[in-house]
Length: 297
Image (tube, rainbow, N blue to C red):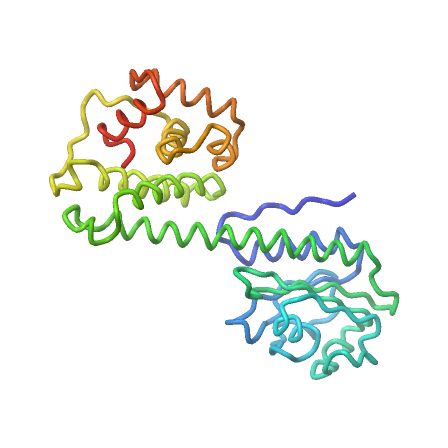
């Protein structure tokens, strides 16, 4: 039975790779697995290991186009050999290290983010038995899961960086930074992508930036006038603000549920609660009231 990878704390890239290497070894049942991050798509330094008997491979630098890993970096696709020593589909610059570890069958798969190999995962045996369909499927599945994880992390970083740029801009210069509708979309997307963050400190940072975006995007701030928070402003919960932010973009309940990774029925419940607090009688009125109170931009 395949085990699920332990989800690492957000943005801990070594932990993410370590979890993937461990899971691939467990899913394939092979004795050895290891991994590496690439440096600008040109080299990779082997860094995470499971099942090795020596330190031959530790910190080995693999160059694009050389050996199994180098071919994976260059081509962006999996490569496998059943008999490493005699394989004529790869170059053999690393024989001393691979054979010194006693490896015979070796396979590697790329971790792709935006069409670029940002990391590699290897599996290996000490016999020439190969890996079979189970092994090939497992390494591809592990690579795909880590690709998704790193893509999400990159997206969180990108959106958070954009949001902080806007949130720290002076209100009078908001129009020079971005259109108000684009700011509103960024605010809603930032709150949606925040649902994927496990790190409490980073989640708090995202929440703080989204609140600053709401202040910057409020009607008074756009005109360059600092906006005071009304003393009687309803206290919407984090999830209620999340839902109203998506509704403000025109999302349906189903679309909002997908973006926030919750059920449509849960969206309805949060929206009803927000409408009650806002004394709004429709979705549109809830959005208008939230904007006028500076809850969302």
